[in-house]
View 1 (cartoon, rainbow, N blue to C red):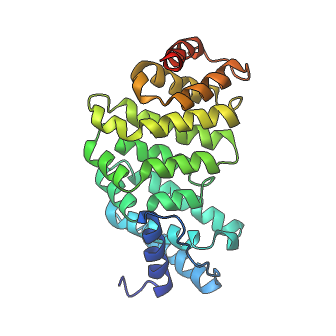
View 2: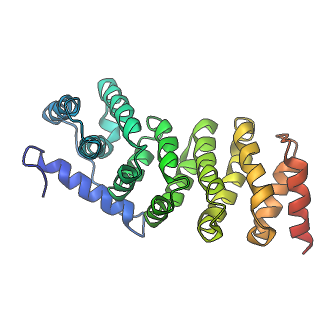
View 3: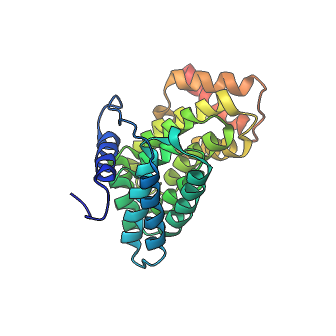
Length: 262
């Protein structure tokens, strides 16, 4: 199934988590496994070997296999494990600038790993968008592997505004660079609007810059007919509540109130 030097449990974890990442339903759960001392030693050896590896594809495989292993049972992690995860993500961030590497990362369930380590993998969200932006093939792969849905789940699972705003902004940044292809942009429009509303409702005071950024996109690029009336009504309510004051707010209100009158 994989490299003979890799414990079978990790290949099973990788298969299970990847299957979950590509399944239509989120009901499939990966059975947690205890992180034994032997398993930790193996992961440490992977990291030592990683330092000697120069091929980006092989680096990504080693990193992702290790992260999948940690993701199988995050409740068992100790402070040393967390340090290793941060080191692995630093390596991964360096190589995700390659579009082909990002495609492989997504195919192998990398987005699910990001969900498992929301706080640790904060910066990887931006790294992925760097490869998806302005690259149609990567964007299509991103969508085929439920990338927009994964980012939206991160927005909703985030315990703080920093992460929620980051994930919502990244999806919008991808759409900004695809304006020459309306058919592709439409694939993420509903997610952008829903995330904008969610951040407005739950993290408005923490995400002013992100809300300005997304609000400008909605004002300038989202067609009125693509904004559901119910969504428009809720956004209007948030903007008029006075909890957050956006420079783009008045323009958004004008646009959204037209939708309500139609």
